[in-house]
Image (cartoon, rainbow, N blue to C red; front, side, top):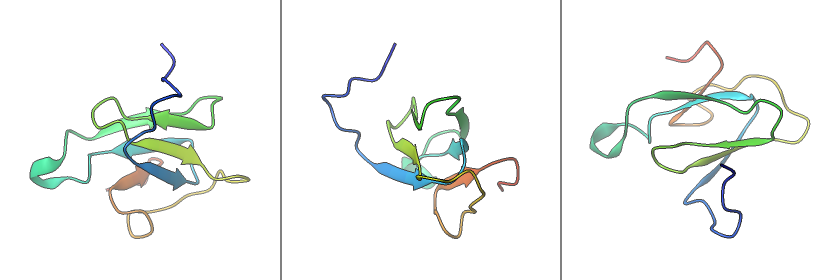
Length: 78
């Protein structure tokens, strides 16, 4: 099922990797950490919190939790 493009996501996070993990920013308001793969698309949405992770134009590098709090990219995450 494709995401409904008429309803905006609650939060859009720009990332530099097609593989990200989301934990809803952790703490009491978070959710279990899930790893998300974009595949051939340029975005992926978390099934728990609906955050949308969008690949930055020209990106496919790495980021870390210091540059994107609450977002973990690649296999080098926490």
